[in-house]
Image (cartoon, rainbow, N blue to C red; front, side, top):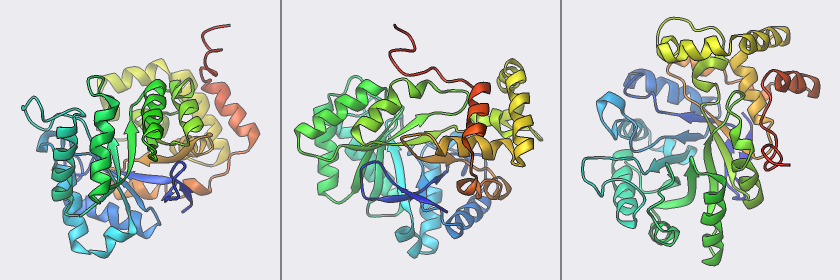
Length: 320
């Protein structure tokens, strides 16, 4: 496994970040534990979750599952960089959501209890809350840092302007500010290159990519059931069929599965610290563990980007 600094912080995280959204609602606890153990053994030290994860089993389910895994062997806690998120509704209570100082403090305490830990390494805002003043957010985050409950602060699904504003407010408070932004980014969805990634690079914010395989579209032909057999997924695959076929042919010449090439391409992009993998099975995990070692030369990258061209830089992409 290879490691990179998380943004401008000195913290080192694995290039592959283990996403846990499937744990509980889609993957059994026993199988989730097996994936976690295998990831740890392979050198993955970055584990990402969120307080809302749990699907039909209810919010908080995935954090509670992770808490039971950590409780099995207390040494595991010191071996991982633990990241979670807050913002999404946790109940019908009108204040049990968003980024008010009250909810941030309450959500953090609840996550700590479910996870069974005394601190969270990376506490992320799951989405922008346009009703919450940045000063209020930083007041809450500063309190949590002072209390030793969190160490670093990150954002997720923030636009470029919000990343800039949030960090400028932190600079004015003489604080470190955001160290990471978790963003939708893959070969098919490249709009993050317009504003988000440039803002992150300007402020030393590490980009953590989610949905790196575009919901499985970049993983090759679907096998069995699941989300990749849903009507919307099949419609997307049909619309992109010519590009996906060319990409599969290129990957076949490289001797690598499409999913591995798509992940390796992301890890070559400026500003990207890590990419989230969200395996639902041990087989899916082991199939991508070699990705940090996959080397794409310039000719291959050019061929990939001819198939999946990006938007280009802003504002040139949409203005003269």
